[in-house]
Length: 283
Image 1 (tube, one colour):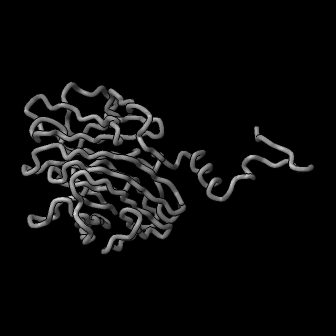
Image 2 (image 1 turned 135 degrees about the vertical axis):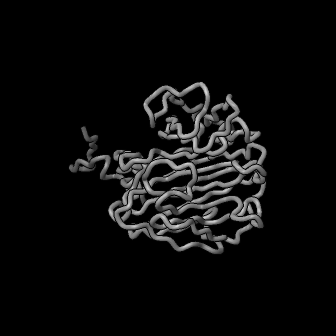
C-alpha cells in the first residue's frame, strides 16, 4: 500500500517526493539489478555445495568448483579456476577483515587455490547481468588493496560475456577489464593495463602508463559501459593517462568479474588481495 501524506488538500505519495537519482536507486533495488557492498557486516555465509554441479563440495579443493557465498548486501560465486595439489589441496574461502573481503591464494603455490574468479553469477538472470544496447548505461566500481604486488601474477577487474567460467580470462569471448600484473618478461610487477577481447580474438593489453601499483596500496577501478557498448575506464576517479578503446557488441549480455592468480613459479606467496568495496549498477 502506498504511503500518503496531505499537503494542503493534495495527497502526495512517498515515491513522488523522491528526486531523480533516488527514484533510479529505488528502481534498481526493486529490480535487483545492482550490488552495493562494502563488506562491513560480519563474515560471509558460504555454501557447502558446488553450485555448478549441485553436489556437496569434496574434502579437497578441485579446479572448476563454483562456491556460492552471501554477504548482507549481495550474492556471489567463487570459481576455483586453478588448484595445485599434492593430495591435500585446501580451500581458500573469502573472509572479511578490517580492510574488506579477503581473497586468499595458496601461499606456497603447491597445494591449494592459486587462481579464483569472483562474480555475482554468470547467467542473464544474475543480479548484475546487463544487456548492451537494451539496458541503461552501467558500471562496476571495485576498490582493491594489494599487500604484496610481487606475489600477484594477474588481476582482472571489469566486465566479460555471460558465459561459462574459464580457467584463463584470455579464453573469454568478450571482455573489457583493468589488468594488474605482468604482460611480458620485461614488464614490471604491478603494471596497470587494460585488457580487452572482442569476438574471441587474442587479448589486447594497453599500458595505462600510470605508476605501477605498489605494495599496500588501495586503488579504485571503475569500468563503465554506455548504451552503445562503448567502454570507459577510470582509475581513482580519473581517466588513465593512456586508455583503451573498446565497444561491446550490441545485444551482448555481460557480467562484472574479478579474477586473481599467483600461478607463476616466480610468485611464491599470497599477494593479499582485498576487495574493499564492490559496486555495480545502472546509471
